[in-house]
Length: 232
Image 1 (cartoon, rainbow, N blue to C red):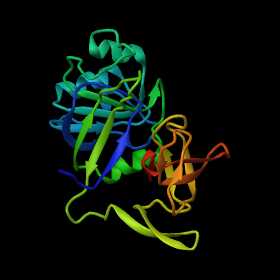
Image 2: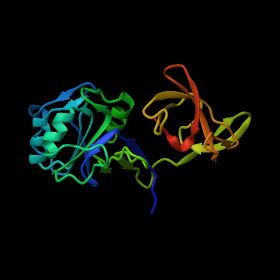
Image 3: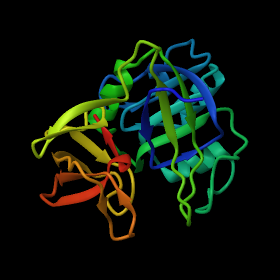
């Protein structure tokens, strides 16, 4: 079974696969959310914070029935306190905790990327699927939040002009679009689409795939598979 959806990739997470309804508890990507900032009713909610949630806020959310938390960052020691055990570098996702946590940026005080924050805010109230499972060894697995579109949602692809020809690409993947790279060696980096070549190209890995050229914020222009970028 397939569906059109937005996928918000995380950097690190803990907790199992679950579902819930998006609920904003931060008004700005740089907010630090404490227990006193949370509403009383959070049953089945996936709460969206800003730069960080305190340990007290996480425990308050769990007690109020929240199913998950998505925020920019969190201190490592806070995650250990919530999980009740040291968090290894192998794989997470099997912790015995009442809710799942997905960090979109990393550890510490990490403001959520504005594009990510606005995407989540635009979909507040929607039912989402999310998973905190993270594996940092070979066969990397990252946590994610999946926001499915309704049946009348936008098409998955669209026609764009590139090099004087028309080609179908992922919706929104056109010159000038803002994107985030989802795989190494540019994982997490933001940029602007510079070109969408019509013909597939062979990468250093010898894979022949459709690619996109992205001008990163540091000025470099890189070529990556279209599947490895998310359009915002």
